[in-house]
Image 1 (spheres, rainbow, N blue to C red):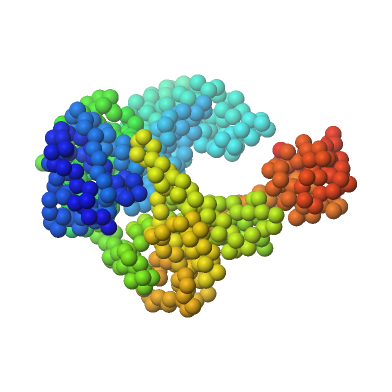
Image 2 (cartoon, rainbow, N blue to C red; image 1 turned 135 degrees about the vertical axis):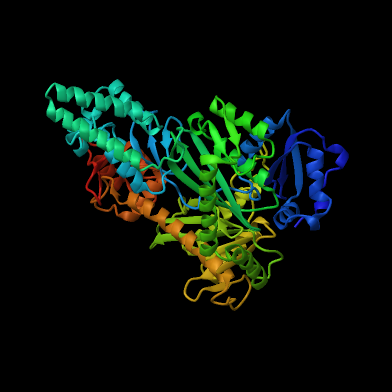
Length: 639
């Protein structure tokens, strides 16, 4: 780790203006982003008494190798820039509010010509309206099933929608009148969009208008003796009422608000938020995050920044109820009002219904933290202990904070692929995973050691080429960071292949081990006998998780490649043209389309293809009606 005094900027060179600062490690990677009203005061606090810092902050300062800053005009600009950099660089030492599970939303794709209602998880997409989150996906489906009686908008996928239009028949929902069937022209685009807009209006809380309209229509139908229509409208009103009964009325004044509560201890914190729309609880959400030395107002500020800064205007309510106000409530209010395009009030409730609701949310946060601690008791300690055990047993200078594991997958030398998975601080970092196609230019399929040599060579050549190649924004390329430890799936031959690559490329300060599956032996380069880690050790468990994840990732990619290779291309059944020569043709030309366009002379350039066989290939593929490509598994004719 670096000595903080080696990169401490002279205090006189740091401005006293507000701004945003970034700590980088020795590889130029951004590891922390923060903001300050006075950059000089804030940055000086990191270097004056390292021993007095919070352990997480002290580790960050020791891991860093440089610090830089950008001056801004005011606190609002600082908040915006801080959020932008955290999203862009994903610094490892910034507190991240992650869901303790993935919450589903009811989404309506208003950006499509024919909007669709569906269950969605993950990142929000532009042009889509979201309602929730809900605790369970089945709750969304039950609510949607009831409301489709009144708002028969489309719920099918794009593939089903297109096929229904081609055959001229709607799906089952169209026949039972739970879809207006725009796929077959029962309703035009404008009419279907109006149904979707009314559905969104109802879900947003404007429910009384629809109930009143349907009630008036039902009574008018009864007066006109249209009893069947009146009965249907009565059932529609009941469906609406049941959907509304699922949401408890908590605020009688029809308030739109998000209610936050925080429960914390020395190491972690739990956050719960209730989304109240039209006075009813429409959804609930929770996070559990590691805690550093920040006080609760600073935590609330970062929480609001991460929850709302990337939201659309309709995702921010008029009122946000908090346990305490953020550090700078005026700046945060200005930022949220700029995103929402309207007034936003940050309040701490002290009495009445809102205080009662806040207490309910706080109890949920406390229970969430308690469940998390029971489920993951000792997890943070176990991760630290696992890294320390690996450092001790493998003879490393420091704990391997970044581990990369490589695995090769194939079936008897065909469709050879490899995977690279990355673990940082003992946790998987899936955005850094990579897949490799191996042996594309080799005359014969490579064996395991040759494949491992090729993959590691490609990975570390990219590292050497990109390690100093930072863009103007300071963001490094995908292979610019070296691992502390390379793990290969296999024994001593695979380890030796990996070490040979590092020696050939002159890469230093990267340790390499192999983990053999049979007895879970750890092989070190140059050692005659393996290292046997205790069976119950956290270090061995971490290595197994890394190895198993690399194996899963490689096998998944291999199955994808093998499935594509099972497609008959029109070359099968040609005498003298077996799988080896077909593979050679594909490697040489890259695709069946290019093989079809090749001349006899071009085909004979491929090893193993003589003039007579080349003429047969041209005759087979170059005819007026060449055999179609067929998927062996499904029998589907491919283009």
